[in-house]
Every structure is written in structure tokens, then in C-alpha cells.
Image (tube, rainbow over all chains, first blue to last red; front, side, top):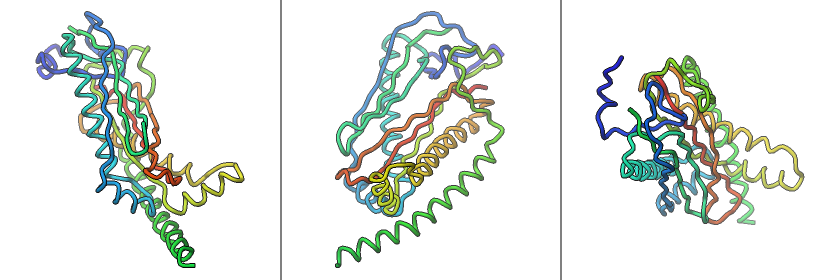
Length: 116
Length: 146
């Protein structure tokens, strides 16, 4: 139970939506970290989405676009956390807002902590 | 007259293709929900301790769904009379179930026993010309524990 090779490697960042990391103890709170990105939809995707708006259903292009963007925002948050010397980010929350027509901001925030 | 003809054609395509897409999607959702039924999903966990958990990982599922031409038209009329817009109720419901399923399937691949502290969020992505077309993004995220 005590050897967790994947987690003990120092550069692995643990992300949870909980107020702690199950099975580990929080040593130090390092404060709020955040990452965000603003993305515009591109024309190619807009045309297919325009056609899709007639028949409805999932807009795969946008799903992928927002997934990539969210990953980037998470990546930025993790960078900020590792700069503070954290090895986990807890209580993560996501937020999306459409700024103007055609652009969306993806925002992720959490608390950087050090766990043992 | 021409414009009216195009409008009717689009409405018909929207109605028939839209219903077909929706029916297929609902069947698919039903199947996949049945397959992932063992995985427990709860939205407690932030303040409650989960003593049996040993490892944890963040899982995110997201989807963008769009209304069809027919639904948009009906909803436009409903805005005048008020009341329930049932065509959009089914749309957001589909989106939410799809997002939840994607999160669950990811977590199952990792070997999660349950997903705790799940949050659901909906965001509207307004169209470029703001023509009343509704496309929404639903995301579901939570912590999978082993």
C-alpha cells in the first residue's frame, strides 16, 4: 500500500476536486492558482457548425476545440502551481464564459498544496 | 416566395434529421448508461472524508450540443407565448448525460471505484450572428478514486 511509484515521482502533479488528497496529508497550503485561455472559433469549424445547426446534435469541432483549450488552461494552472513548489492542486473548479460572439474564455482555478 | 420555400425545406430537414439524430443519441445514451451503471457518482466529498480512498485523479467530460432548425423555430414561437420549451429541455438533458458519460467512461478506463464531488456546468456559446441558434457546452468534472 505504501509504495506508489507513479505518485512519488516528484514532477507528477495531482489534481482533485476534493478538499484534500485521499490517502495523503497536506503539509502546506500555497494559495490560489489559476489558468485561463480565450479561444476563438475558426472559420472552417464555423461552416460545419453552421450546417450542423440545421440538423442539430453534437458539434464535434467545438467539443474538441474547447477540450484542447481547457487542457491548456489546466496546463497553465499546473505551471503556476509548480512554480510555487506545489505537488498537488485541490478543490479545482472550471468555468466557461463567452466573451463576445465567437470567443469563449475557459478558466480553471484551485488551491496549490504540498502533500507528503 | 423562394425564401419561403427554402425556409420550409430547412424546417423539414431540421425536423426529420433532427428527430433522427436525437433518437439515435438517446438510444446510444441508454446503452452506455447501462454499461457504466456500476460506477457510483456522487457530489459529496468536499467536506466529507473518504477514508477508503487510496488514489485520486481528476476527470473531465465535455460536449457541445446544438439545437436543430426546427427546435430553434419552435423555441422562437414559444418565446412569444411563454411556457415550457420542451424541445430545449431534451437538448440540455442530452448534453448533460453525454458529458457525464464521457467522464464516467474515462474514469472506468483508469479503474476508478467511484467518482466523488462531481460538478456540472453549462455554458452558452452564442452563435456568430446571434440568430437564436442555441449551442451549449456542458461539462462534468469530478475526482475518481480507487
